[in-house]
Amino acid sequence: CGASPVGTRPLHPPAAAMGRFKDAFFFEVWKHLLSRPGQPAQLSALNSATSGLHAIRNAWQELQANLKEEGLKKGTGMKVVLGERPDLFDLSPVGTGHPSVVAQLASTSFDPAEGLPSKADVLGIAAAAASIEKSWGAEGATGGAAAGSTDLLTALGFAGPAAASATATEILGADGPLLRPPPDVLEGAITEVPASILMPTMPLFQTPGLVGSGMVAVPTPAEPKKKKAKTAASSSATASSVAIGKSGYNDLIWTPLLAAVKQREDNHEKDMARALLSAVENYNGATVNVAKLGFDHRVARMKKDNKFKNEKLIDIVRRHEDVFELVPDGAGGWNVRVQPGAMAVLYEEGELAAKLEAEAMLPPKMKDAFGAREKMQALRVELIHALHHRGGRGTIQELGQEPGVQQNKQNIIQAKKLQDFVKLFPLNFHLTMLDGNMFVQLQDYFVGDMSMIDHAITQSNLEFRAQKGSGKGKGRGFGRGMSRGPGNFPIGNAPPRNMPMHHAMPALGMGMGFS
Image 1 (tube, rainbow, N blue to C red):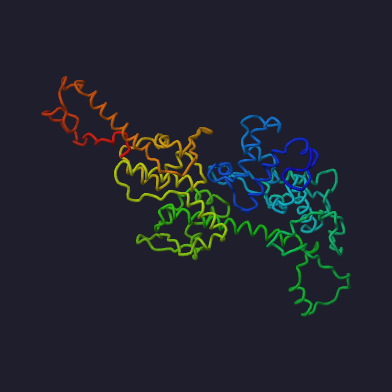
Image 2 (image 1 turned 120 degrees about the vertical axis):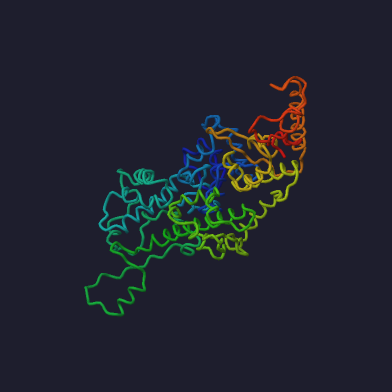
């Protein structure tokens, strides 16, 4: 096979023989994830006709058309395919709900302009960093680098200690210290970092925003001198200079790695603030009680993260006083109100423009719907907003818990199952059964065609009249051919004793629950 279809980086022999369609798909997903560092993307949204990227959808469709050539079985899902590159993609679930993917931290060291990195290259970056961390960060570490590299590999984004340990063993295993530094590194007595430690392409230290441009300069240790008494000047100079540990210069590795970890923590904090903002907007942008925000699916999912699971929502809200305002609710609790300019605080200019562009497709909500026709349309619009809020996909049960859906559904007297209502709009929604759950996929945002609503109301009226007609002359216990008055009892006959008079027949158009 020739050059890589996804960039200038050459393919390794195993990948060159088979897998060019998979590599093209890997590349498009990886490139997309690099554009949103630390933010997971739902797998369903990647291939969505409304919110997915055109390049990803095309790559996935080409892969589906060449499954046999790629060694895949028919019906193989996106999660299984992406799982073949654990060095690039972290598929660990985010809370409960939809499968998601985020770029592994080690893979973010590579430039997409150079093409798709090989698994060996990405794991080599992680193993090199782990090897240096073990040698420079642990006193007397002369062997067993695989065991000491587990923590750092885990910190770099590998899914769990077990997977990290297996990766470290594979890279640094018993065949020899593939990337283990020589003994003189352990003693901190070298003047430069050997090429055996830092691979020729080691962009981990060249990540923009972490340590500036270029490779980190390694200070040259002075020649060993005889011990002498410390002076105030020397102590001050030592305190203000680069920190030197027992095994060498600690900041060589930990400066960029800790900066990367801190960046990921900051991204988590921003994601939580965005989820809270979206939850308030989901309540029509009004003042919302803090406790209600916890029922939002994104907030509930992120609340299970280790960073937030032991915190109260009100404490998280207080950390973002430039986004939210807390107002007493008069009952000892607190309501949340969005501050002016909150969007500009949480979103960069490009992100905000993309968000507003996506939301421009949403039909406006109908707050004061009147009559059966408008109320059905209001529920239809609310379902579109709820699915958009969830990335274009959600279960029937989840949609039924959305506050806007619940409110509009209550306005439909004798409403049937939400699933039956969704089936009325095949152009907007697509139903799929997966793992015993009924999922709704958002197909289209257009709601100008209301003919299906008119048809449903007409059908409801016809069924009601048919039921009314079939009841004539067939009443039980009241005699044949007797007309019935309000309360479903024959005119001139009183209802049974102690029977409440609330069984009046519904008006036309309400028999199917679409009023």
